[in-house]
Each structure stands twice: as C-alpha cells, then as structure tokens.
Length: 318
Image (cartoon, rainbow, N blue to C red):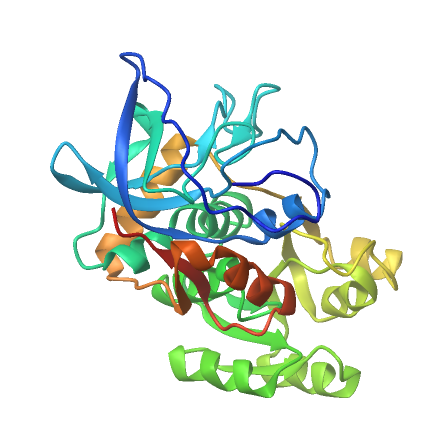
C-alpha cells in the first residue's frame, strides 16, 4: 500500500471493492514493477491518491483461466493518441501489488500459453509500450538497422526482442558492458557504451547507420544518436531519464529528412496485436529478479539502483 511520498510501501490488508457487472476480480499470481511505480513513490507523478495499491502489470486467474491484464485505461477512439480521460492501472485505481484486483472485464486477456506467470506479468506495460513505438510509430520492418538505448530495462529489452523477431538487425547501448554482452547473446548484432562517444561512432560505422532509433533517455547523448541515423531515419522516444535533449544538430535533422515520434503505452487494439506477436514468435520476456509480494520495498530498491537486466517481478501467493 502506497501511503505517502518517500514513505515505504505498507504490507497490509485492503478491502476489495464490490465490482459491478463491468468489472471482474482477478486472483493474482504475479505482478511486475515499472519505473513508473518508483517515480510515484517519490511523488514525481501527477494526481497522486493516498492510500493506493500500486502496480500496473499482473498475471492471474479469472473464471478458472490464466489471464494477463491490460493496464491501459480509457485510450479513446483515436489511435493516434490517448483521450483526456486516460490513465494507467495502479494510479488512480488500485493496481496489481495485491492478491486480488478488480479490473474491467474488457482489460482481461488470455495469458500466452508458453509463458510462466512471472514471465507473463512482465509483459503488459513494457510490451505494449515497445510494440507501439517500434511498429505503430516507427514502422520498423525486416531488414531495418535498429538502435535501442538503455538495454536492460523492460521496454528496451522487449523492443530488442520484438525487432529481432521481425527480422531487423538490432544494436544496443548501455553503460554496462555486461548488459551489452547479454543483449548480444539474445541476438543483438552489437553495442556500445553511451558513455564513450568514440565507441558510439565506431558502432555507427560498423552498422552503416540506423533506420530506427528507440530512445528512453534524451539528454546529451540524444544528438549523437541522431547523427548515427541514415537518411529518412525514424526516432522513437518513450522516456527522458537523462533530461532534455542536448547537442541536436538542426541541419543534420532536416538534411537527413529525419522523423521523431513520441509514444507512450498504446490502445486496446495494439495490446491485442502485441499478445498475438508474442504468441506467434514465442517471445519470452526477460525476468531479472523475483521477490515475494511482502518484499515489495526491496524490489523498489532494485528499481532505484537500475542494476537489473530484465523485469523485477513480485510472486504472489493467495
């Protein structure tokens, strides 16, 4: 339970609200953390409500069948952007860091059969974000050279797996050589440390430039990634952990006819498409650490330190 900014989460009993006919109660088996949950605990998120149960990602049992939950609420009718009523499960409505959660029946989907509960719980938010930015926004396709920044995080890893499955050649960046090596073991072509400008240049030369760049950092490294783009390159942005863009060469941008696409989460249609893609290509989300539900504060500490490779998951025993 989230009871206050910069306060530890409280492991306690919470009364489950009586759902109406449009809601169903999912008995949860696993839930995954997202960077969003950590930002909420620091107060760096709008419309905070106390007390609240955090958590956007969940896998559990509904009507005797294993299911996953779509955390994207009230996207609206326009596929280009979400509505003014949009929110993500876990704030303002109680989320998945619990034994049970009441969610809209339209947000309950069959779990991909080849995944464990922990793997399936790692999929919804990160998978939806990765699928939309890679395919709906940047139109990545077979044969593209794709550069993904910050490999190791949930969205970046799934974007890497999705792009490889689609037939793209994937390159990655990270501040950790170990994370780059792990991405290469998964099928990435190569990578470089974003802390080393020369290594980034050499990677760009080795790849022959990039058709698609997927970035969650921004900051001073963003301009360098633009310089590594081929003509007609598409840049997808879904985060800004390093702050505002720096070092962007405006002539480089327009002479190369580059396009920048902002993106976050996705529609119900994209969630269904993402699950179908995962089933077809037998994609297995990377789970980095698993904690018991009562140890949620330890899991948040891992998110704070950003040492994990893959998703941090809570195992839930009803």
